[in-house]
Length: 196
Image 1 (cartoon, rainbow, N blue to C red):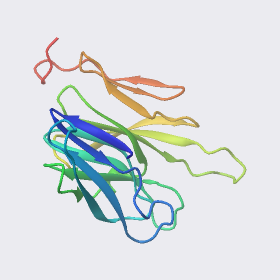
Image 2: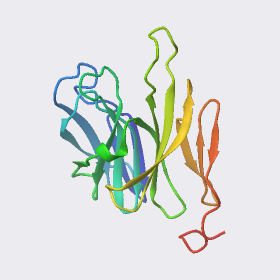
Image 3: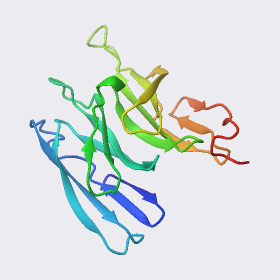
Image 4: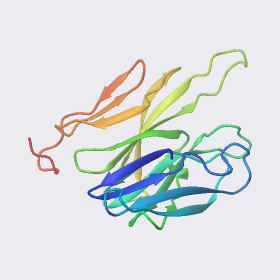
C-alpha cells in the first residue's frame, strides 16, 4: 500500500505502484482498497489502463471527490515526469483525468485549502545544461477549483531538495515544506468556509 485517505468512516487506500511502474510496459494495473466502516471490512479492486511508470503517492478526499495522485512517465522517459490524477465519487469507480494542462511534474503531496479544494505539490527535473551537473528539481503547486479537472499552477522554485510535504493548518492556511524551503499561504479569506 502506498497511501490512504479518510473521509468520515470511509477509508480508501492505493498501491504505491502499478504493474508497469518499473518496466514501463505500455499499460498497467494498480490496486486499491475501500472500507465504508472505518477499516473493519474491506473491498478491493484494480484500476486498469495505467500509463508507463505509474505511481500513486497520495490519496485525498476533497470537494466531494476522492483523488489518488502521483506521476507517470512521458514517452521515452525513464522516470516519472507527468502528473497522474485519478478521481472517484464513491472510492470504487475510478477515472484517470486528462492532466496535460497541468504541465510536467510528479505529485508528491496533497492537502486541502480553507475552502476544501485540493492543493497538490510536486516537482519535475529541470533540463541539464551538461551531463555532469547535479539534478535540479523545480517545485510546483496546483490548486483545484472544486472540480476534478481544472487546476491553477504556481511555481515553488528550483533546488536539489524541492518541497515534498503539505498540510492544512487549523486557521485554514496551507503549509508546504521541503528540506530547505517553507511556503505558507496567505490568510484564508473571510466567508470562504473557515471560522476562527
